[in-house]
Length: 184
Image (tube, rainbow, N blue to C red; front, side, top):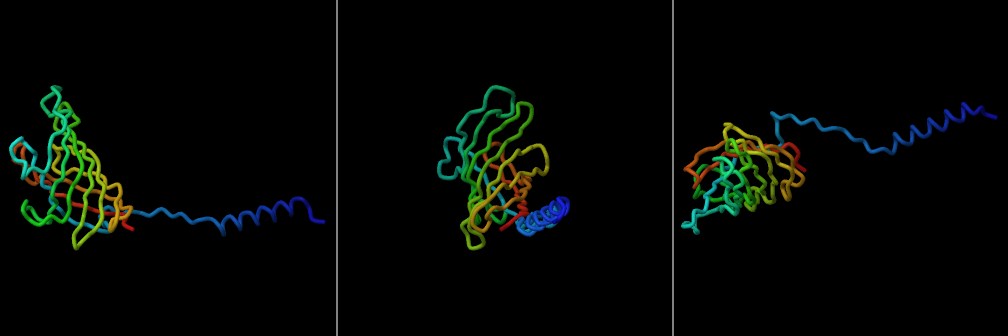
């Protein structure tokens, strides 16, 4: 007859062996910020509707700014903006940026964006979902890519904004450096 210690050791060994054999191996993927899986640059063109340019406008304020400060605090803008591979507004769009931004600081210009890049071109099909704070006074600002569909299924990454040009409050163009780190 075996001793209880030997029985306990055999049972413990069996449990450890089976748990190790049938467990799902989870390894943490190390992401290198200098080496994204995919990287490309697009230009975002926004033409704010001013009451007269229905044919050309790509965005419209749906909530007016409050009187709290001089920074358009509280103003909400909905957009459907063309995305091009170059700086030219009239170039063929490779995607559409569809979503909204609102001004969320009373003391300086700052906006919070939430939008989807909708691709339907020969290069890509699918969407990228982007959100985050646009600290407008900074030269370069990072927003999060929090998911996607199609060619960008379950993607994560970073998009870096740089203001390329601005014409008052009517038109602005952003250079968007899109870096994807997890692509399935």
